[in-house]
Length: 248
Image (tube, rainbow, N blue to C red; front, side):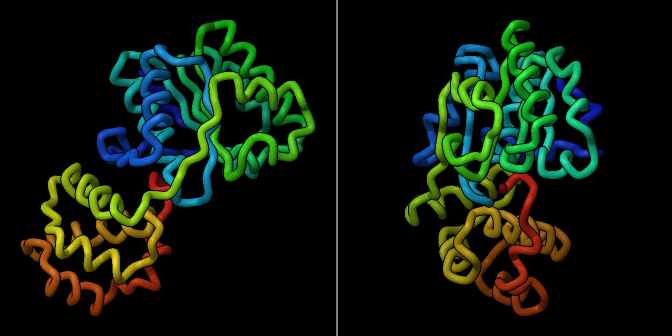
């Protein structure tokens, strides 16, 4: 089962599962990660893409599916860990079936972290576990000092996340809304796509806020209602401040 003592006081959000992730052009990556949760794929993966491309959501989803399959999974955001923990934190994680490490670029070039990651990969491999890492750039663009680590990290495949094309953005919003039990009419989704920043993290954050507003007001999502909520406090320029978490 999932390791509940996730470092740094993190808790995996309930909505960050594969069922709420619109794969679009990233279907091959999603299927590979699903296979890792059941160990029908190679025991590693390197996923890269810019901020708000969905990397963190996919790691959360992998942990959730592994847990549902009765396996032990762990998640660690390296960008936070590097400032508050030592590389020795990774000792013993080979007891997990799946280990997910977010934002590898945060520790690239740091000898202690690279050595710790290299050791963890080898121990996980020997124990039959899987390691998945994400970064904001492809592996050959990372300033890794330990060449052997770089070669290990790409053993299971490298996946660059592509942004959703315009025709898929509305479908992605509707999928997220449906997962929350929210009815998102096409005209409301189209209105949001015209009014807010185009990255899906911002759109999802706004949708979550509108869901809370609609629930509090006991109103359905309509264009007039959304216009009023935006005018009263959730402006498009502030949407990015609402984002983060699983949208990354």
